[in-house]
Image (tube, rainbow, N blue to C red; front, side):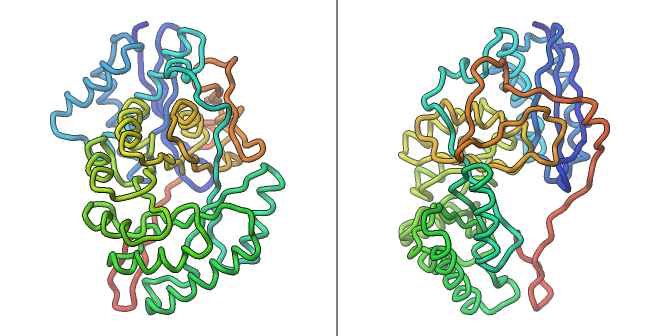
Length: 377
C-alpha cells in the first residue's frame, strides 16, 4: 500500500482556522488534522517537505514512518513540526484501518469502554445565570452534564488580585447553586505567573468540588507544578502546551498534576499519544485529552479514548460550523459512541465543502496590564 501523494487543506470551522491533511494510497485516502492556532500558513509548505520523506513508502508502517520523520528532523521538532507530523500520523492510521476494513480502535486492541464522556467549554459569559442557561440548553439537546469555563469574571491582568480572586469564588458559588448536579471545570489559560496565586485560586474554587482546575500558570517549570499540586484541595490539570512523552514524564514523575491533557493534534499524533498514555497510567495520573480543534480531531480522539483504561473525560467542540465533516460524532446522553461498522475514523470528509469554505485568519488576544505590559493567554 504505497503512498502516492499528500494534500493539505487550509479551511475553517466557523471563525477558527483548520489545517487538514489527506494521504492517498492504492485508491484509499486517509485524513488527519493539524493543531492550527497559528501560524497556520506555515504548515502547508512544511507538510510538502515532509511528504517527500514518506513518498513511496508502505502507508501501513505507521510506527516506522513517524519515527523516520522525527529522526530526519535531527533536532526535536517544535510546535509546527509536531503539528504537521500529528496530521500525517492520523492519516496513516486512517489508511491502515481502511485497508483492513476496520475502525482504528480495532488496531489499538479494541475498546475498553462502550462510550466516551465529553464536556463542552462555555465561554464569553460572566454572569452565572447566563452560563447556567447555556449549560441547560446543551444538556437538553445533547445530555451534556460537564462543562468548562473561565474562572475569572474579573480579569486578573487588569484588576487587583484580591478583587479578581473574590469575584471568582463568589461566581463559582452562585454557579454551583444554579447547577447543583453538573460537573464544572475551570481553565485559567495560564493567566497567573505566581504559583502562590494558583494555590489561592484552587482553594477559592475547591468548595464547589470542581472537576479540575486547568493550567493556572505556564507549564515549563515542573517543580512549581509539584508545589502547587501539593497544596491544592482540588484536582489539577495541565498538558496542552506540552509535547513529547519526555516532557510528560518529567511532569508526572515530579507529582505535578492529577490529570494530563495532551493534544493528539500537537504531540505527534496517535502514535506519541499512546506512549504518553502508557507513562501517565504507570504514574496513576488520569488522561483527559485537550481537543479544541475540528470534528476530524474529535474522531481521532474518540478512537484513542475508547482504548485507554485511565481515560477520564474528553473536551468537545460542537461541529456546527464545519460542514467538511459530513457525519460528525454528536453526543448522546453526554457521550460519544463508536461506529464499529465504519472503517478508519468513521467519518467522511467532504472535499467540496473544504474548497468552498476557504480559510480564515485568527489569533489570540493578549491581555494588556494597566502598566502596558502583556500577559499570557
